[in-house]
Length: 68
Image (cartoon, rainbow, N blue to C red; front, side):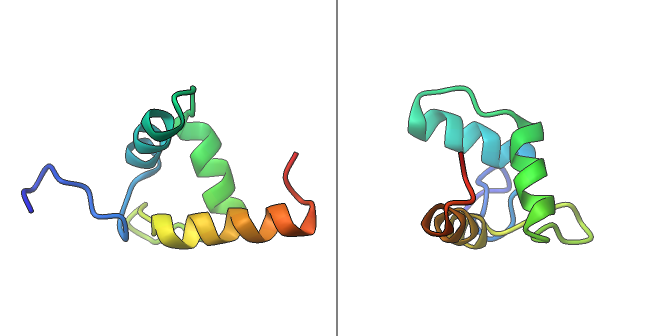
């Protein structure tokens, strides 16, 4: 793993937005990712979060009807 290779357990909102946009072939902004990460209280002091925890949060919200 190189210094440029992102770790899914320590992504910035900008890195996550780029990955999610590419995976879903649609626009995902850093602000959208940051908003969800903050709402879920996933952001660490260094500004990173785990994409695994982020995805789990979104799945939980979807099953509870919390996502439009």
